[in-house]
View 1 (cartoon, rainbow, N blue to C red):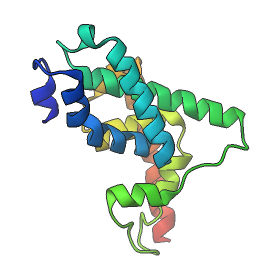
View 2: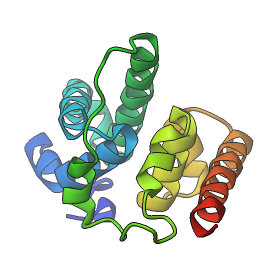
View 3: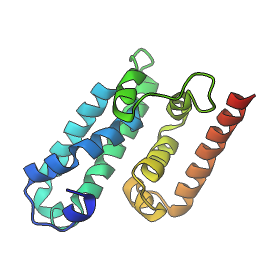
Length: 170
């Protein structure tokens, strides 16, 4: 079931989870770069959505779940920054979901390292924009920030990615 079909449809919470689990898990993995943590965050997000199901089921429950997921990922990133001894996940988890990485020496071959190095909100904006294909307005609503802030986060993140691409070609 696509996001369009879910919006406003009369579906149960179980049907919602079945329809969105793949998309939201991939989003979570790209947000935190740790498959196990992504699964935990998604489980927590579904738990919060279930508590508010009657209120959100008539609107766009996937957007609500995505917002909860992004907020959880940002909070987790802040927790990790405070506790440096927490191990980070493996890129192999992302590779399993996204396919094999580009060959070594190819520009962008280690793009995941640059994404991982971005601040949490910049990474969230890039993932929501280019992975989830959301518009600036939707990203702003999801993150609870203004459209101007979305634009500035996107510009800074893309500048970092461009710089990385230049270094890869040199």
